[in-house]
Image 1: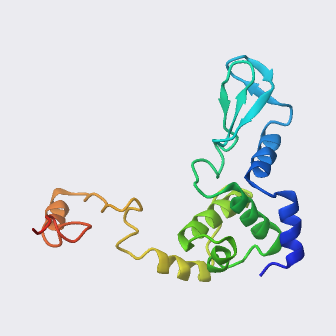
Image 2 (image 1 turned 90 degrees about the vertical axis):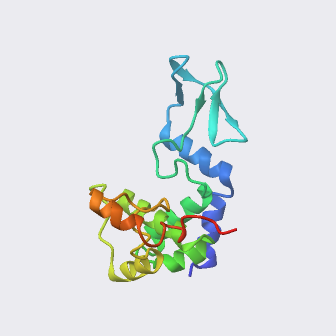
Length: 181
């Protein structure tokens, strides 16, 4: 999909996670990091075990990913940056399945990343319309019975009658209400 030249140029710019986090910090805090505890711009050092920086004076932590599409994501920053690079400069209409293969992530992760990135790149901040290929892919990933609630549990019934109807039958999401011995 990508030419080796494109991938090499990306790898030179962002060789590892630390380079990605440093770039993000520099973009978010171009004049230095303002420490809320010290109430001024202070020198901060990188915490190796976390995606954060600590104030050299008081130890207050600053997380550059907070409030971004990367916040609380277990996907490495380098993969996020690579996906943004692909979708913004190489092929904005790349199918999600190909992006998943290129990044080495699951389809579900690539779908989430694509929609967050496209939403971020759209001018009005809203998620752009999904083309027909994405709709087909989406149907493969999320069948009707799973789209009710992405956390894995059935959505609650709107009325008591619906609740009674749901409680009889299959026994909920896992198929049985009790374990057999």
